[in-house]
Image 1 (spheres, rainbow, N blue to C red):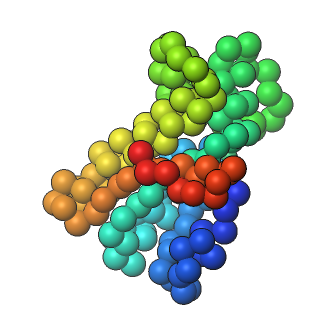
Image 2 (image 1 turned 30 degrees about the vertical axis):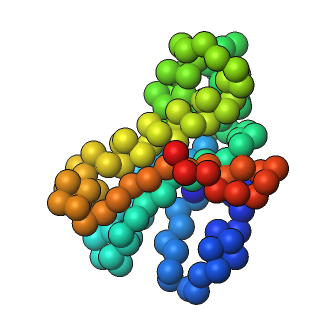
Image 3 (image 1 turned 90 degrees about the horizontal axis):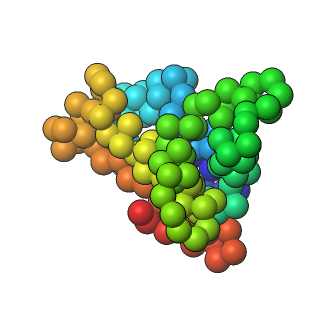
Length: 147
Ligand SMILES: [Zn+2]
């Protein structure tokens, strides 16, 4: 779920070793959920990683929209509405680097959602057949930081 990194190159993988679903803001969409369910239930994916990244434009736009009003054009406004539940808690807590905290909160919210999403992923997690983990790609260092 990341546009900034070539996951295939970074993980030194062959075709089909990674099943990648990408969307700006790395949040769960109905289509993305269907793809993840297919990956887990049909292809046998054992780990789903929700991967955010530093300096995420979608997260930063959502933070701005939630603070100043969502006046974004077209379907960009839909992105903000979809990302609001994951990002809003970061706005209600104090601390430095709101954009970083919002990015992490968004990853963690979508991890929790996938871990409990019924009927497929949540059941597989509960049965110990699937793990859902969160991480972010740190653009300055190129490292993936586990959450
Ligand atoms: Zn981004």
